[in-house]
Length: 327
Image (cartoon, rainbow, N blue to C red):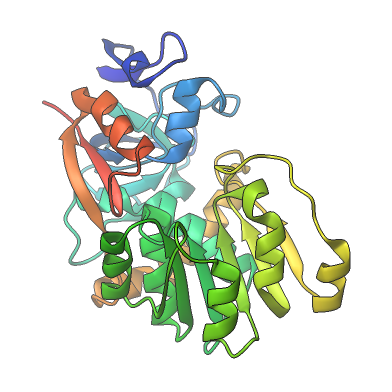
C-alpha cells in the first residue's frame, strides 16, 4: 500500500508518499481501507518533529479516517467486512489502509457522506470529552470557543447550541466570524481587534463564560481565567500560544474555578473507547437528525498532503481539510 511518510522532520515538503507494508489487524482490531482522512494540528506537529506517535501506533500521520472494513481481527464482534465506518486513530490515517482498535470505530452517521465522515472522529471526540464529559457544559450556560472557525470550533459551536448553551467565539477575520454565526454562535469576537475578556463580560452582564475551550495555552491562560464566570471551567486542548504561562491562583480561588488540560492521542485504548461510546450515544443521533454536521472546507488528493498542511498552518480554511485516498 501507499502512505504519507515523514523520512525527516521539517516543513510541508517533508511529507513523502511512499510504498510501505500493509498493516495487519491484531487481536481486537479491524482493518479499514481508507476513503479519506483529515488534517489536524497534531499532524503538523508530528511532521515538525514535536509530537511522536504513542508506542505501538502507526508512524504515519492521520488521527482520523473514514472507509470500509476489509478484515476483522481475533476477538472482534459487532463489525463485518464491508461496513462503512469512521475511526479515531493514534496515527496512520494518511494511508491506503489502517488497523484500528474496534472500540475506536464508529458507523458512518445516517445522512453523512462517507468521505466527509472523515472530518468527524477527532473533533467530535475532542469536543465531547472536554466540553461535556470534563467541563460539564449545561443548558443556559455560556461557552467561549477560541478558534471558532476551526474544525474543533465549528463542531463545538454546533454541539453547544444543540444542548441549549449560549456560544461566544474568537476568530481573526470577518468572514470566519460570519461562518461561526451561521452555525449558531451568539457572540462574535475578532481577536485581532477586540479584547475577548471585555467582550464576553459585556455580553454576559459581567458574569463571564461558564466554560472556555482553549487551543492557545500559555498566551491566553491569564486572560482566560479573567474571562471565567464564578464556578467556571477552563478546558485547555492546545498550545499554539506556548507551553508555559503564569496562573493567578488567587483569581482561580475567588471564582471557585477549575482548569483542565487533556490530549486525546496518547490516552489508553480503554479511555478512547469510552469516549467513542459516549459520542455514539449522544452525538450520532444529532448528526442523523441534521442538527449537527461536519464542516469541510475542501478536499485534496492524499498525494497533495503538503499543500493541505500549508492551508491548515496558514489558517486558510474554515472547518476541516480532507485528504482523499487514491486508487
